[in-house]
Length: 476
Image (tube, rainbow, N blue to C red):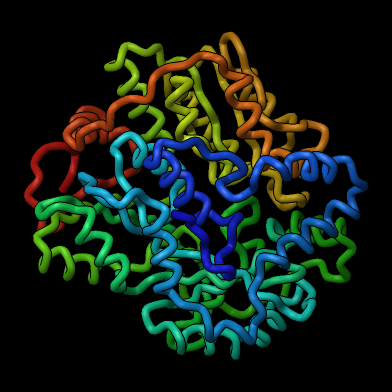
């Protein structure tokens, strides 16, 4: 069956990318071109890498805007159509568990190990705007009010977390606005998938990233978030600072800080945070159908990365595989199929900024040294605030005892290495030549065993709610 996403769904987004990566593995497939780009486009993408910077940026801007829906068409967006596409990505069969909730790249590898589909709460709708300067967030917000009303009137089960980040998304935001929406309820399509795929007594995992961000309430279900998780802090987005001034000067803006709408309180972060209304609906549904609910809660998107890495090392030792090979992934550059085929330990980074750089180094400080370290790097085309340099990333590779290499990265082009969207996949099997058979799925009891042995070492909380009766593991 041909799986085609609605035309208003963003391809280069955490939710769509991680959904595709998870589903590809459960279908027994690898994950070329972040799940969307056919191989014939590789020469074209490689050619873009050779163009002058101004032309590269223009192509990036136009290509991103090409994904966006016209603002006057938002009333035609259907949350149910999106859900139908998402569930169609998965083989229609029985599963031991299903996960629902926040995007998290590390958890893609846990889903692969446990044979578990994941259904996102959040998805991104890129919306064309009439060329508003990205450094004018109040103008972006004012323009967006009517399109937001159209979207929300047509979709009562969604709340809009509109996000505007003129640092990391500087190129893309010149032609479009980021309308991130979160499900407040399961909806009939998710419910039907659960009924058909999860036997009575099966487990629904609720993935709840607790990260919040300063936001502004615009209407009942319209929230505006200026800034995003990455290099710049919320304080810098709202009040400026030396790094902001230098960034704006570099991009020839007349401003030296942004004039953003005043936030009224912290709410779930637009891309990663979990909106708790969905939990209530999942619990209602689980009570009616006889399912158990287990919550996975963590503060930061990358909090799961050390847990999953050490879980894989533990699993490999049980399989008598030497767990000395680390594969570092970046944003939606992921490969669960080849991670397991090469016997690699996955460590996912949210992005390519100092925060991710520091978190990766903290993990390496806390674990047994790796003989080999390989790294993918997402390129977003911008010298954004807090971006880690290619020299920084080389220092991580130098921590390998025997071999450290980039995978699919043109070091001279980063962070404008647009060919990496193909080369992360084509270069991986050539760079790591060891092969193992794909393993049989792990039973949930193995996850419980690992949590029981080592769960207290990680900033992750596992719990059963009052509906559950599973015993064992570090849960409450």
